[in-house]
Image (cartoon, rainbow, N blue to C red; front, side):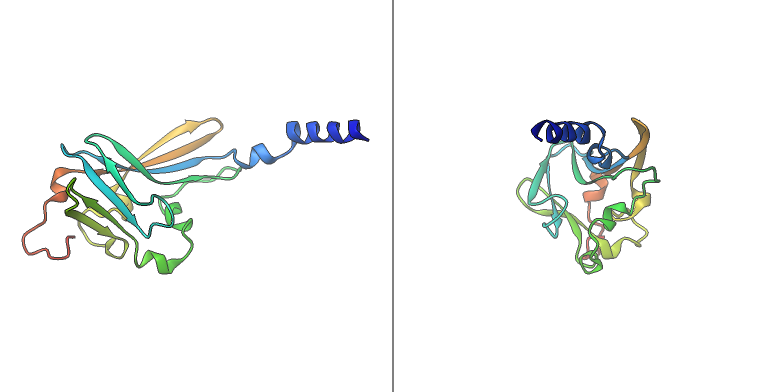
Length: 161
């Protein structure tokens, strides 16, 4: 009986689908600091994606979201990031803040402002997309670059858009 059970476990591990479940394309969303100063970033609400305040050195990046697709082939989309949140009520309060080393607010991007014509963190056209072969699948990485001019508040712009 023990031998049969052991053989069953070995056969299940070697041929079963648990490893295949994680075999699929991945998506990553990075924010890159292309300024000459260390920045702090925070994402709200904190209960998913990144949490707390993260330091981002010049020329460095932080990953703010990622998805490991479960098996099968499918196209990866920018909005997959929001699909993992699932609750549209959160979309109304989502924001990404950039702070100076001394904790002064330099920029805040809000999900609700994504349709503004200016550069927006939650707008796909403000990101660079890189696709790469990852085994049998094509995975994706989106990169949002924070530039010095993104942190300059325009005169009369009290909403920091």
